[in-house]
Image (cartoon, rainbow, N blue to C red; front, side):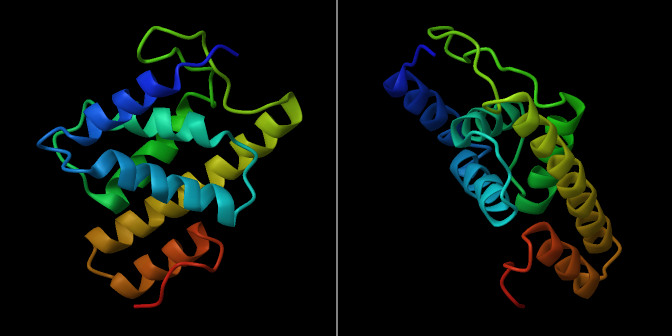
Length: 146
């Protein structure tokens, strides 16, 4: 795979510096990478960083729960498709290193998206206890207690 690490870092920083996002690109990338780590999801951290930045590049604000939910749902909708280099320098890059890893990651992304949606719906309904329970499931028992 061709790479352009300085350009990709600049892209992430560019999105992260958008006034309406106010640092959200890096925060969202950290959240989704924590989900990956705690659930043993065989997906590239670089892919998650670039998808997080690309997703937030079109948003008007950053709200952690809403955005991790929508990002996970987007990953599922895209079926973890290969991604074009957002800077147009390197070639397309894959989410996973193999078909079995892709299948495993997609399955875990579907579960994660469902749990994130349930947490968001519970929060919107005013049920913070249930929202925290789903967040704890989303992060495989590692979400901080209230």
